[in-house]
Image 1: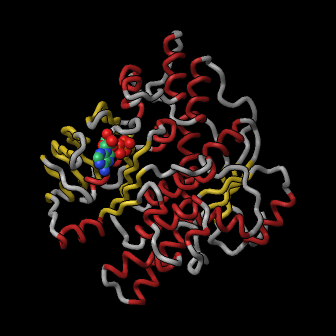
Image 2: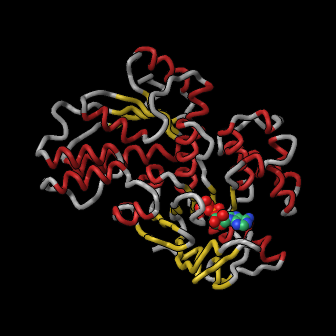
Image 3: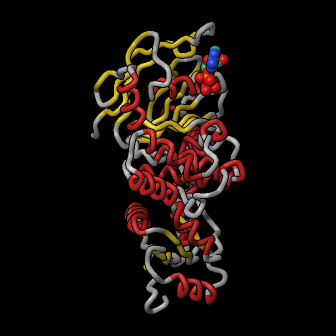
Length: 391
Ligand code: ADP
């Protein structure tokens, strides 16, 4: 099990002239975890996140980073904030400079990076969030989702170990929200520990490794999401509703169907549960196959031609850069979130599909499809598009 990176020991916090917002909280977060702090408005989520990177100091108890208690002097806080980045809920409050470049450069410049290193850090961060070429743009002309990406890039430019994001999808439309959640997944795949706050339990349920259900400054539940959100009385007490897939699972169970122990977190998982409950076969036809195109290879044009020969083929794009490049090359995208599962669902109906993605994610496709096939005794073919042969 990986090392504990952040820990809270019985922390309490009262706002000056305000009520006690955090009322005795203890828990730990391990390196590489995806944590969702979930609760209704006023539960103390934002306050808790502010305590996590030392922006406010607990009145009692202790915060630790890498097993060392936080120091609250200027130098310690500077070091801490380089390791634990914070993205505010409202990007307009975080973005202050007149151009995207200057804004993202703010952290590295403050940390005393050389001009060359600043440029390198900013370019890397912008490429990562899919905003290459936005350097000279004034941030106030960007869309909500783009502003959020600039704010994330500003934190990424300092290469933190932990990324804290307060309400990552607030103010975004569904597709903008999906893009941000996928970006957080990508960052996590690269090894970053991610902590988000949200009141959207449906969003947190499939995404988080662990969830903290917060109410009135205290932890109501802290566990893997299906346990943390699986007690109706707790969820109700927190003025939330149980995730739909989990509720459906319990309803089928109450009706006496035999259910697998692992709770469904996606539509594909749920389909599996239903098929088992009704003793259906998962796939009644020859499964379709999935063609993967790596955008880091040179063959965009021949891939585009190949797609024209298969006009009805559903295409999914996975990863921020892959989506950006697909847009630039006018490749239509049918799915931009939960892409592998959606292509497996197509395959179960006997339909073929394609996935556009970047180098590091290519293996994830074959691994996920192979794992699904193994679990269900099915073979779904995955092939890699070859620009040389054009197929
Ligand atoms: P959440 O993020 O879950 O909506 P918050 O952490 O913002 O909750 O707020 C927790 C409690 O602290 C609420 O009762 C809120 O009114 C109070 N609070 C938040 N910010 C301040 C502040 N700056 N001054 C006084 N009270 C505050």
